Length: 295
Image (cartoon, rainbow, N blue to C red; front, side, top):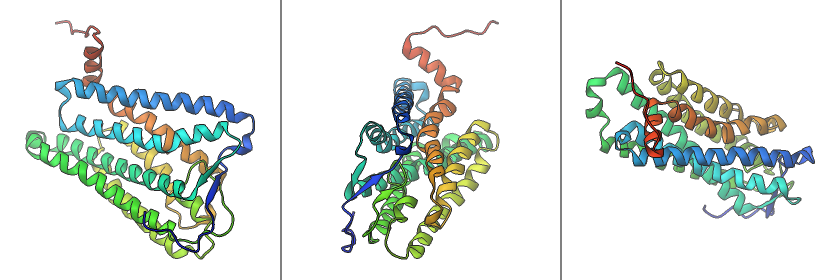
């Protein structure tokens, strides 16, 4: 990230997180640890199955492979630090580390949003143009869409992070969240943040409006996809589509858990493990007998 604002005197932040829960933090640690392990195992399983089964070497499952990898990186940016802070009395994070976490969180989050949109387009083509599917969704287009998702996602993250880091932070340093998210960090800036909040609001709105419309059409016949889209975008919109930093509250942390922990856990189940082809491929990888239909 390009140099931070020189008027910034805050060298570290305190992530308040779930400090108010006292002894319950140990229980939360166990719960989040189990959820995190499930996320890693589920996504790793999907990647191994797709990589090992030639029958799954199609654009749709290629997108699933990339999404699973991106989701794993996305949770790695947030959950390990959350687990460490749940067991630690000191919950500090340096200014640079906070900015880095914010950048990678936004980068992978935006990339995941675009990947979900790409998967929606893939299903749209498969449903509405089945005879031309292999011609339209060729390897070159698939790689291009994945690359565009990553580059665009991290470019948006770079712009948003630079806007935030350019603000002066010279007062309170207690972030009312369990990781460095945009709204609670902006709230600590000791300047008028309305203009930059409006810019960030516009970035998030531009990101969500076209992709939401694309997914509405593409997932019209896929209830499971709509479920993930609703949970992911609905909960994230509650946090981000509000150009008022004072609106951040303790309830936001509960909403944030949905799109930082629950959604990455649901995605493997909804997109892959409920799919008969993936289940059959998983049985082949594990050496389990496949069920045969009676004639």
